[in-house]
Image (cartoon, rainbow, N blue to C red; front, side, top):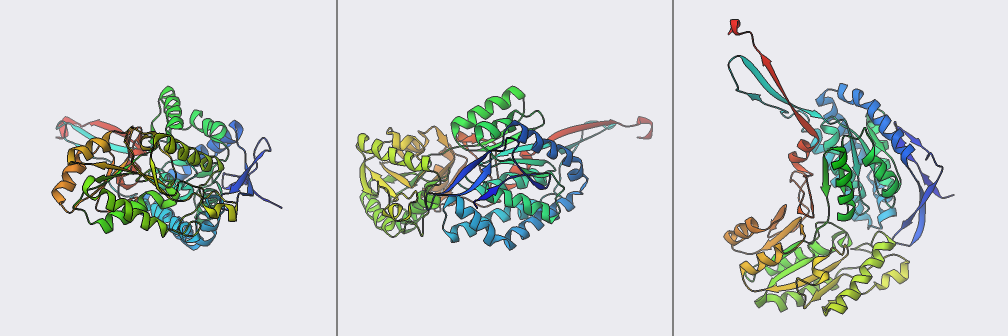
Length: 478
């Protein structure tokens, strides 16, 4: 019998109110692996009610006690890493070693924020001798967290850990395509001692369960990671309800290689930047800007480096059939725009062998920044290489984008690296490296890449609101 996955509400599994389930496909094989609950308004209402009921119990836990529970959850995740990684792989198709690394990264969020719960949460203001004025940071209440399918466990942890550390309870709505690891995470939270309902997971589609979360009167803030169009809808609903929202949306990040760069390091970073997670990362470096005098050498060496990637072993599939088809449509768009295929541009042979949604890593040259393949987020292992002449040209091309999430700069001239970093209109810049950063580094975008910050101490500040208290002192005692 096929595995069935239910909501996790109030510390127990709960079947969907409508009795319906959605099929989940393993993208590595194209076969259905489980059914997940199809939630709607009634299910979300039950989940939010459980979170509201748990709020007082969660706040009754002293701050250091909450921190210990978060750290205990991190330990439980590591102890359960094999199971979590298997669940993650079954719904994303990631190779085992990649899924295990995701578990470790996800556990680090709970460990990090567990250590921050006791940090100062306000200040004393010197207003007048007869007034004692201070601020305190208080939790919002119930946070609605909506996550996408590309990095399910990681992105659930990234939002839920700081929200819980700040004293909020959480209703998490993961993608219907990748729900299993998030439900297991909530189960582990219950097992280590979180109050029932403090960490609740409701399943279903974005149009049904997701929309119900954003509309619910008892959701005090929403944290959303996903596409720009969906983010715009959520921001509109949040604006009507006058509640805050954190939006982590798309990207078309520029990776700039100057002719004085260490080309070995730059090419390795460029390959990592567009093939990690099969390019299904909002911060992927999918525009490679190369100074003209080293352009041809870089392209040639990129092709050689990409040829060493073993599809199905080093790089997994696209997570959904829809995304698999979308990337193939962009191959047609690239051809119509006159881009030159240096390597890839095809469905991988491994797709035919396995039945999975595998795409060969693809590099296009002869690309102008006005082309659709240079402006639109493809969300697959597709890199466009754009030549430039001067430092000013590189900055102008990099900034000529609707997005502003991440950028990279490769140069041996540290003054240039710092100067260019200051001119790039993005939330993060990597100089002579390319990575997703550390849990300690704030992450978020400008322009259509969203607003608000995740990760780092800054994320903790987004899950609390400031209250100012003014006390009139007895002047006779002064």
